[in-house]
Length: 404
Length: 215
View 1 (tube, rainbow over the protein chains, first blue to last red):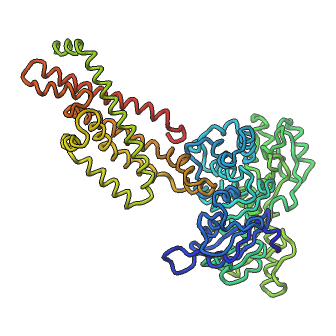
View 2: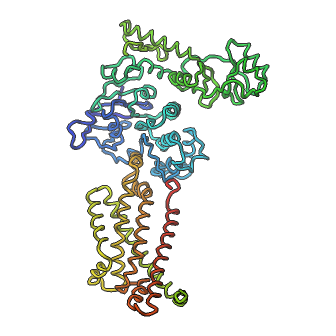
View 3: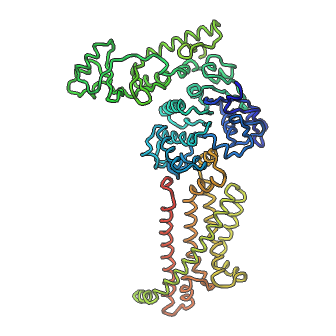
């Protein structure tokens, strides 16, 4: 990779804290390309957070250089440098005495944007993270849920449209279900904003899901491997990397395939307002055991089968089982499997980001992805191929029982 | 009792004037002490030992009996308004400085870090983030100091200082006469009423100056 395309380049970056014998970060060299999500992941104490804070110079390096867009920023004014990089931390750190709008406006205010432009931008950003500006702009952080605060934290970080966002365990404090949702939303947002993102986590699953590239760090922020998630899972560079990925490496690969990457099933559908006859007709025309009812905006509402239709006392919109929660097309196969196990249903409706019905994914689809991964893995462990898969989606190695 | 009410009615204007003077010197002292204390607090809250030293000095000043302190100030400032003002400022320093330090230290480090990470410089961080978040605690210190000063200022009359102490001391010097009790009681009740008024005032100030987001 040439340095011309590198958004961030770290050159022999070293940090030794006063009174310590070892370097917290030891001569780190790293290039991060424009528009890429790079994950720094490693065991605690490996120096990943220190590395992140060296990039915006919250910690000043002992030696080495930092380049941003080709410019040496190792000794420029740190406050000006930080206004060119969004910063999101685990605790979010919204200012509790300021409204959501004022929080988001922090950097634009410092950059002396005019009022009109700031308020337009604030509204745009609140909408962009999936909230309603008319409801939330004038609220205070304490009036928001943890997930909403995290969304606003992201909105605040991208307010002045910086080319780079630094994120330090941004989703770790959120409960697992909301975390998955926020991760998917963030990936969705990234397809629009295309920022260069440096993301620190201790969670290898999160790294695999979120990263375009992952840097696995050992003590002193030494890079054990810097590769795509695919390559790291299929061709770990060392025993350390293999140990870090852990025994569950197999199923982790389900995190690499998105629901939108697999072929969805055509399911019989009917309008929520349709009469029983029309629904029964739709059911008979297909080979499936049920019909999916959609509302006026084509959002999945109910699964209805022939037995449900016998219950003439119940109005149609209340028949059968709820189709919520539907799976977002951007979710991974891992999310989808999780959702199905939670709802105890063998199939789930898939929707786009506006909630509009796209198709149905069945547990068999996921099972066949797993089968093909296992076949691949078996070939790799038998030494039949070099381990780097050719197909990004389902043609991937799955570790069977080899490791456990 | 009836006599006392007649007395209050008769001396109404006089007591009111004394109360205004009393409130005035307390307010001036509090404004000066707040300015000094907040600056001291800001300068020391990140330096543990210096903060401990400053608070220690202020604390020992607070242990000097007020009458003794007033006496010590006479050779320097003479009698009247000035020595009383100086003594009141000295007494007011500790609660405000201590609360400024405590308030600034209790600001969530994550908030300060995110402010710094967004490119807020030291001064901007202090003015826009740290002081507003510490303000309710600082204001409590100011309120405690004020109520304390209302009481101490009464003793200032000993140095010919202004305020309700004038009546209290006048009464005390006339013990045995029928007006002694009236004078002293009138002055004392005035002091109490003034303290309560100040307290209500700070409640209102707190409401107005604290963000809805941190209440």
